Image (cartoon, rainbow, N blue to C red; front, side, top):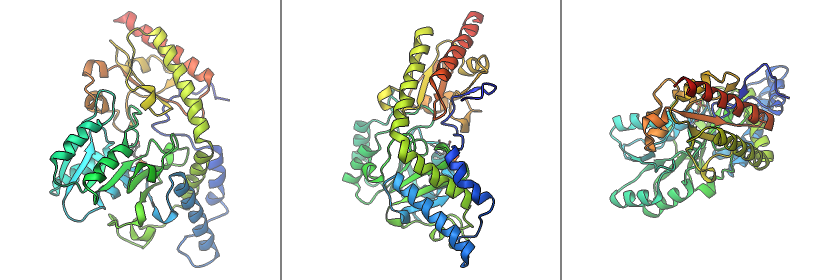
Length: 383
Ligand SMILES: Cc1ncc(COP(=O)(O)O)c(C=O)c1O
């Protein structure tokens, strides 16, 4: 049962609460169990076994082998390792126009180091366009590294990563392909072979695990060049004593996702459609940014005409949602994914990102849509 003193949480793309099963798995490692996995004694061996079990769970969730999983301090660090750790010499990098700053910022660093960085536009449907990519690839003599997000954090648009990877490989067999799957893993089935990627970012706190832990999948285990130097943990690629409790929680979250992802995805997609129907019936001209067929099952991104999304939310305090990505909510919206899609700033100003999760029930959707509609009505009578 939801605590009715709390707002209705519709911001699961920002972060997710730690699931009870995850907490249960972590608790011993915050109390009676401890040890440094590098220690040779019984405490160390037990910690090392717990880390190995979690690694296997995360690998299983994405169709990888445990040796291909490198634990990092989260998604940002995994993305940085993928981009900055793949090559030692400058080359040519391809990214999409709707990457998270954890990709676009290290891409800018690479540009400063002499890399050529090409940015693939997205179409009005929020996805990179395969014909445009095909044409672009035909004009380029070399591609060394590609990074295209699996599902966009702001809009929830699922990108055609498998098709894109196949296109790149046909022309540039040696290119390395990364995808930031922070928002996708745990919400939709993600398999590294089906996607055809060499590197993939996974984030614990987006799938009901703790924050501060993530992983980079690396096909065949390497080669990869470390960005941090110290002890030899994570095969020297991410030195530092492993946070066993966080890793165990991440493993439990991966196990939960593997067991329940398809059923939860269907359930949340049905609730998301209910939310959309209720909003669309009450708010004339409301516009759904991403078609259901290409959106994460939990995400409804809309633009409400004539008002600012932030003002609607301010008048609906019983709903905890966002107008864009939590990571850049202090920046004007139109420069984010919507700007890249060509949505005019006056339409983008009315954006709302409503992301559902395991805790969302039908009553929440009804109450949240009522609150958002009242907030919108209060504003439209003012205007
Ligand atoms: C697509 C995407 N990539 C990377 C990150 C960064 O992950 P973290 O906050 O764990 O560093 C996020 C988090 O919002 C994200 O949505």
